[in-house]
Length: 388
Ligand SMILES: *Cc1c(COP(=O)(O)O)cnc(C)c1O
Image (cartoon, rainbow, N blue to C red; front, side, top):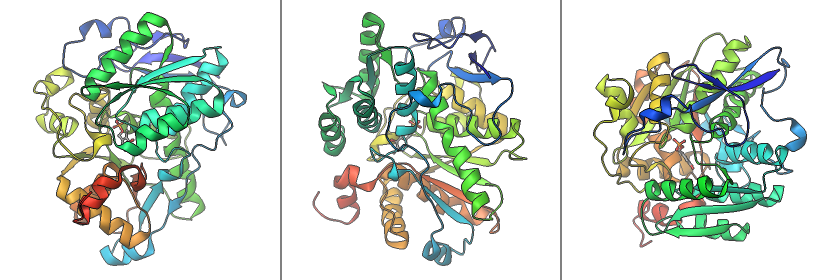
């Protein structure tokens, strides 16, 4: 199997080596306050093992920490409550640091280990930081995170407990992103910034393989709809990458409908899709984000262009939900299934609630529950009408 990086837009290919982040040509078109230009995907050629997930790093380099292989729930009471016999919850709160981000961190750490890189640096709204810190602790890597001071306490404390270095940023995630890039460019440490490092997209594709396998084991056929909470759009693109591989390998016959679920106050990708425009034009009017779903709060979605191109290519959909709908959905989900999700993930459930009557009852709907409710108890308290 041969691995390389490929620009999703112009098709230029590059060697997969540390320090390779963006397409040399397309990244020249970068404008201020727009999504990243020149995002790279990983691609492979040659024969793949039909049983396993094709990944660009050999298994011996992965840190000994149990990432992925998370359970797929068949939530009986929710199914009855909503007349949805084929509703499924992919419970990524079960990852070691409590969020989906571990899938990306795990692959980035393995790549760093393989190439003898000792330090990884990143900006995060919280979960990517706590995730990279957890995996870094298991791998024995130095982790440096730039975190907006507004990140929920649990995520900050996690970072410190795992022994990573925390640099608080008195500003937004977008500012933290730029500061961390300055640092990695200056020092040569590996950047795990989401979308910027192509391995972040690749690591997230593993969930699609698991969904297909879990449904198969349950005797339930292929996924028809997948609901994804979306901020920067990297999970969304990773999910698509996984299904693209699965199509290429003949393990599924059709691309599921992927639903980008966004908060009303941070809906750049949904707005871009609705605009009918392509490329950076679709993101011409950035709006400062305002939602309590901190993990999907971004002003400018870093992977917006790439994610939009996937949605447009495969007929993906977007659904936007208010903070009130998110908080209500959080309670409905927890009380109806036993799964306590953070607000971002509750947005996926809220999105499904909003469009479920447009979906055929026999279709398999898989909701990505990406982060644990314990990560942001303050918002959950608000949803109960309690003083946080
Ligand atoms: C980061 C994150 C998301 C959104 O992922 P993007 O790649 O930024 O779209 C959703 N849910 C949780 C829990 C996250 O941490």
